[in-house]
Amino acid sequence: PEVSTPPSVVAVSQYACQRRTTTENHNKTLTDAFEVLAENYEFNEMEGQCLAFRRAASVLKSLSWQVRSSHQVHDLPCLGETMEELVEEILQYGRSFEVAKILSDERFQTLKGFTSVFGVGLKTAEKWYRRGLRTFPDVMAEPSIRLNRMQQSGFLHYGDISRHVSKAEALALGNIIDEAVHAIAPNGILTLTGGFRRGKEFGHDVDFIVTTPERGQEEGLLTNIIKHLKHQGILLFCDFQPSSFDLSKLPSHRFEAMDHFAKCFLILKLEGHQVEGGLCRAEGDSRDWRAVRVDLVSPPLDRFAFTLLGWTGSRQFERDLRRFARLERRMLLDNHALFDKTKNEFLAATSEKDIFAHLGLEYIEPWQRNA
Ligand code: TTP
Ligand code: MN
Ligand code: MN
Ligand code: MN
Image (cartoon, rainbow, N blue to C red; front, side, top):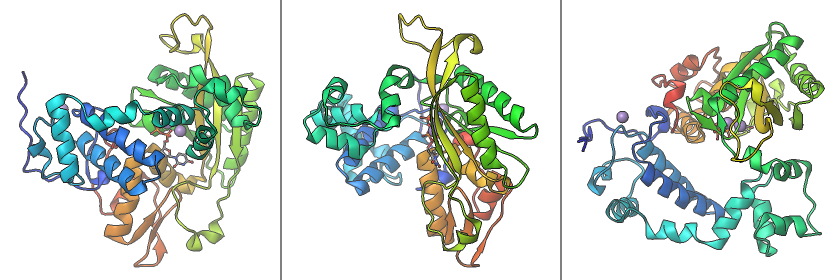
């Protein structure tokens, strides 16, 4: 058996943006358990506890070694005494009693199932649960429920879009979008972002940024891409959100998690012959196509670096970048801009490296942001 000695001399930062976290997770049993607890707290609207367990899971993900004794987590940030006991229980018995209880809980299972549908958030899932609905057929059979367009598509394509998307499928979609972009704008710029940019082998969707060097043309570019995809007969669903980004209002803007750039949440039809090695499909599914979720966001070029940093994720990495900026640098960071509260000015950036430098952070490569 391999022997791994934890490099205990190396201090681990409490901020994910000061850690390098690859897709290689040496503590998956632990982090899976912590994430179940976090999700259960989220379902019970206990946000503080939820965040505490997400942070702890993220710290464990960053370790280059496998935790073999609960003493080894004692000096780690974000892991208190209860979490240390939880680690001890899992290491000793191979599982946690509390996690097992949650996983078999009817409310947890039902909310998990409902929120896995595209377009169904926690509020809707809870409403359905309170009405006594437990399964998808229950929802379908309930006459008082009116599904919105997104939810209808979510149920219609549930089998396909709940299946993971492979890297080969992401590349094929990249080619399709790239062709659409260049048919419309020869100098348009397409960039893969999200989990695939972080080097993940599989994702739940594929995320892209599209922009153009011509100022103010990016929104028209997005609507024309949508038209192009529709024309090709591969647009299965489209929720287009026009830009609500206003440069003149920026200084008084509240910094929020979600951005104001033009974007669209799509479901596209991907054909087998377009994918090297073929499609990821269910056993016995003989169709030569599948439905895939695709997100496109379209910032003006001068905001590209902020959008790229914001959409590359992971969500935990983004949360900690913003928290670090606010608490350690008195700066406000979001997908649009970086504002220095001390100097009372915006800091421009043309690359992610510029933003890390403004924040006084060592540069972290995309594949090291799987926090
Ligand atoms: P996701 O696509 O949800 O997640 P992911 O790509 O990291 O993982 P998966 O493989 O499961 O798809 O989101 C990617 C990033 O985009 C995430 O860091 C949050 C960010 N994001 C925004 O900043 N604004 C938005 O409006 C949306 C929808 C996402
Ligand atoms: Mn390793
Ligand atoms: Mn994604
Ligand atoms: Mn996405």
